[in-house]
Length: 338
Image (cartoon, rainbow, N blue to C red; front, top):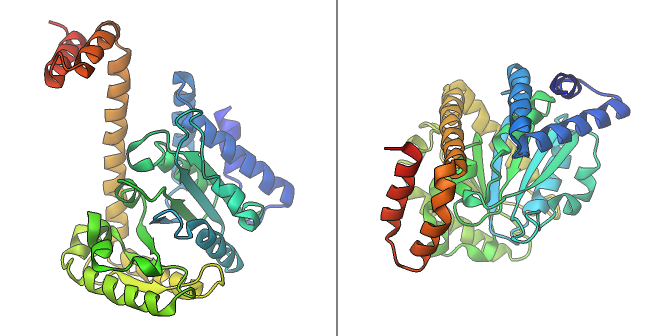
């Protein structure tokens, strides 16, 4: 199964319509396999990713975040169509909040990118966040590798835009883009939560609605960015790049060329100074340890001794009868044995 999937995914070049559709179907099946929690599927997914690994790493990985309502989906569709006109193949991994009832995606970004979603040179995959930290789907990194192996040279990762999602997506992409609204540029908004420390590029969308507000926001955010004098070194972007603030209108297509010029300049600099490769190696190691920790948590919960104690101790902790630290030590002792 995995060999057939790999062969279907690894088709390259200008594919005929039928072959392109078959490749996208294979990609969808592969990502579904990767997202499965079944042990046998996990083994198959590992085998598939190992086969695809040599053909990965050639794409530009761009993370895009912003508060709900900032226009991320409109921006991504406008950008994606523009990039396709330039000769790129574009993959979009849209991370949606998960329904607490069904576990499925709520926002349905694919339905809101009507033109991009049906284009033969685009691939859009909405995935539920499934309660993971920061709203970032657990297997997004692996889905990114599938897209790269299939020849998509631009991978856009859209996050929920709440909580810690910015930190999570900045840790899996090469460049982190933060979208802001024109009327959200006050000083406190600009610097809160340390989000600006992560941003390689800040984009003020919907600038056409209130040009004066957009200009004020641009000036205030630019001033806020100057406070982070160590931003470049801390975020791995070296001394040659300072985070920029630009204005666009995704709905009208204004500023998209300026945006991509900034992205291209960023990647050219990062490739030239070697920081792109350094950052990806660091991300791969962090990814490995994240999967180890996740696997250990899953194995811990499934251990017979832990499963026997967990309901009672959970109830006692919830009722305030036992300190959480004491309950944790009992569970650890049960798992590790005498």
